[in-house]
Amino acid sequence: MVAGVVCLFIPGAQGVGVSILLGWGLSFGLSILFNGGKIDKSTFLEAAIGGILGAVSFGVGGVLTKVASSIGKKIITAIGSSPITRRVIGSLVSGGKNILTKVPGPIRGILSKVATKGGVFGAVDGVVTSIADDWLRGKKIDWKKALASGLVGTLTFGIFAYAGPAIAQQANKIPIVKTVTAKIESVAGKWFKPNSACACNLKYTTSKTQKHVHEGETVTDPQSPYNGKWSGGGLHNWRKMKERVKQDGYYFNKVEKDQNGVLNVEVRRVGYDPKTLNKYENIKKALETLQSGNASKKQQKKAQKLLQQNNIDPNTDPNSIDPKTLARKEQVISKTVYPSHYTEQQIDEMGEKALDQYLQSHKLQYSTLPNGDVEPIKFNAVVKGPDGKNIEVEGYVVPKPDGTVDYIDILTP
Image 1: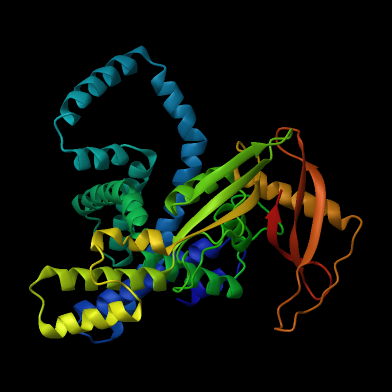
Image 2: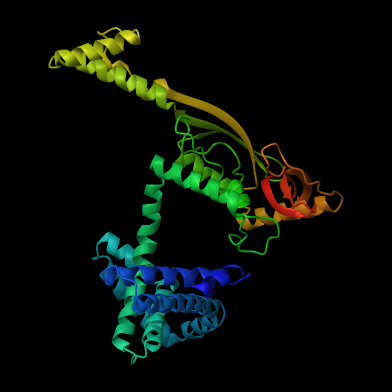
């Protein structure tokens, strides 16, 4: 456990640290559960072995990734060029397709995920981890158990790869899930500014910067018509913007492209005021109660009182009341978006270039706002995009007390 904590503070070793701590914690918890709630020497032994196996699993993943990206490609190319290989594989594929057409859709989807590099990784990881577990316990290696672990690893990957995105997508449609997730991210962003979310070695871009630019900010006010939806803040990535607009039930009013490919868009935000929606839902229900003919006197009295308070004629047709239409709120916002073919990494790199260029002729002055937060400083510069076009990039940077850069806060074309 101590080794895992130490690794968290060593650049480049954070992944190992997380793997050790996850293995330690999971093994510790399961050991207590299967030990009748008791904590003894065996509990800590299981936790220690779990931590070591976590590091082993992390290492296996790293090695496999390297092999797959270098030596693996050469081996696959060599094998694939053989005429015999082509004939054998062709027959297998042809027969496999006939079998798969008879398999239920979900099973077919899982098998399609299993037959990928990730499925192979899951198998190898399961085998190696099982062998390491036997060795650490001083046991003879159980090859049957190792092969079974490999199969479980492959199937687990297939199930999660197939069902995971769908589950996450459906869960994200639930307002409370979206609200809680956004709130946790907003709070965590004040405590942590990890650069680990970057695939490249960016100096100033943090996960907070990337979330703002590529995902946008989310409303977390239950009383807002747009609760759980995009607030209109951030989001300058065209592909992600299209996804977010569709997901939140918004619309594009206008999309225009300038000579350099930068998009100027108008987005119509659509939401429903919760108080108004609740008000007219109650009015409609009251009308239905009065006109049903089978409501109790108490129910009739309550419905009449509600209608009187809102000056509604008791004879009004309930079907003429559409709560959603009456509670609908709209707002049009204008945004500038990076050229549609720019990737997330290219956008992040352009922000870094713009800030570097700005710093060549400007110094950052550190100061704080009344609430104690560091005051961000606006910067802008014209930089070349990956396609050679000149794009003006501007944003806000948060400085450190010594005048150096802490991180980029906001970025926009």
